[in-house]
Image (cartoon, rainbow, N blue to C red; front, side):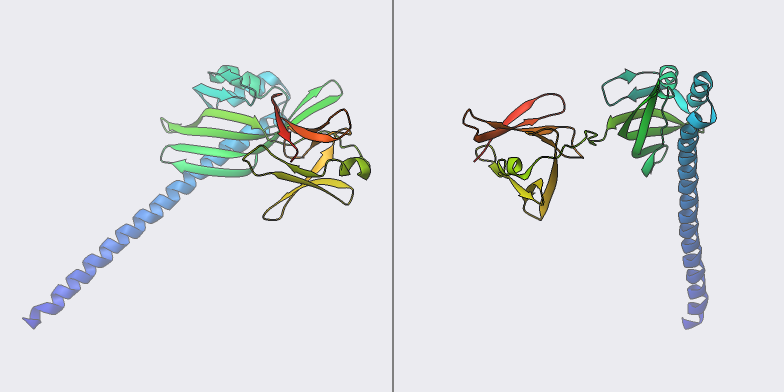
Length: 253
């Protein structure tokens, strides 16, 4: 019996090595395939970003941009504008701004890739420059062997560009206290070093900037809070004003 054991062991060893090699080869091929897809998507994104700087004419920028898009491209901007084809999108998206995406994150699922990141767009109007920081998401699909953008969505980041105003500490001290709706945890406002802060658990400390004597904002929120007083000058509540104009009254406790 033992005279057959060594050849059998040798055969089993060869089989195990072959299986192992096949598994390793598959992993290597999968890795190479992923890297190739990743390189292709990042290259398209890079070429899209170069258009504004390389082609001064809008018509040529639009034509080049369209080459990277599926004909049925869906585009959704941060203010609710929706475009349903690449022709309209190519004419709109190259009209005076640089799509310089940074903080890029890329996920690839077989023939679909999703790229997200931050960008700063700007528009030159005579001698004025309008600019806005935004989130951008792009969806790409491999269609007939070519990667094409099939959807693009953008929305404004909550960055406040208001210019702060200096407020004396005596005025700021009027707003100290706890504010909250019944049954909810209160928001605490305190004054330190001549500034108004919202404080809380886990070392929460948010700096509020003054727009005027009663209106305050933070740098990462497009809304604002407005402290309100009664006829006697006593602060009774604050109005939390959302970016769309909705107002929520938060009483002082």
